[in-house]
Length: 201
Length: 201
Image (cartoon, rainbow over all chains, first blue to last red; front, side, top):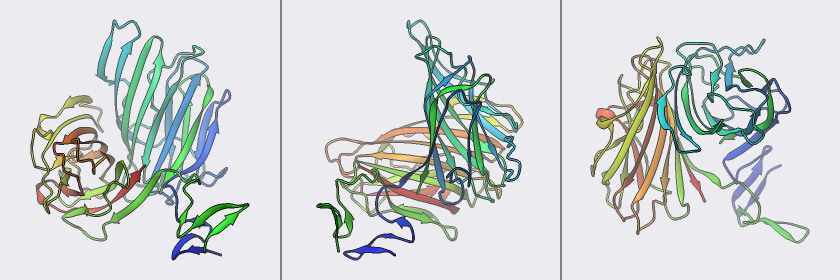
């Protein structure tokens, strides 16, 4: 049953037609987690052609070991191997707490060229109790079977006494649809923090 | 018809009550090309209703290889030629692992120019190549201040590069901005793509 008020359809067919366009889908909270994974169709996750853009937010990602926070995609619906070929760019602005160092550098050691590796979203996060990473990543049209899949991310994190601001972008170089995204640390676990997934209607 | 629950009006006159949380990012309009077009133009719906407008461009595919997506603004007349001063920098990395770097692009900035502003680097037009990103336009209806905007994009450059561009600037007028137009470099067509306009309160 739908509901029409003053000629405007408020809701119908199980969906609201008024309200905001940034739709919360799923929150995963780490607790000594080896991986945090969003799989379309599992555990209420939507990662399909429902939305043309998806937004992941990272909130206070804390690592169990000094490591890089990283992600990969899966275009394999059956085994969900996380090894999609990608080409990326990475640059970082940094500033030390004592003011003795600052920089804006392209990170040739962090980018990928047609590689299946996990893409780093940080270059080192330390384990201090008050140290963590926060940020976001846009993933565009993951269900397209015509175009490669672009992503743009920005992270802010503590690396010892440095404030680090990372800019990561690139594309999954495949025309197969991306149906899952996995996050993990390059070593150790995601000790704490959460990742939220939103659809942009 | 309205809906009142426990004495509280939930909706009436075609709208949810202002006290109900709905999210504050609202889709205003969306254009998906069904065939190639010279431009995608938003000439209504930009007003003081929202302080901030966000344009999401998704899988923009040019008709001509090596073409940039451009934007320009209307400030009261019928022409999209508002004066702008802007900056543009980009990170790049080639699929063969070479040319990873970041650079300011003097060819793609504007200094008090009425010309259109690039939002991407040169997009390839192979079948799977495209550009994605977003443009934020701040307070376009203000008649006191200049109008700032910021954009970021990622595209497949025609030479098999991942190109991540960052653009900022201001429209140097105090007149209200009431239209935004997207075109391709050189007056060529946008072969395919979607651009959505959102308002943020």
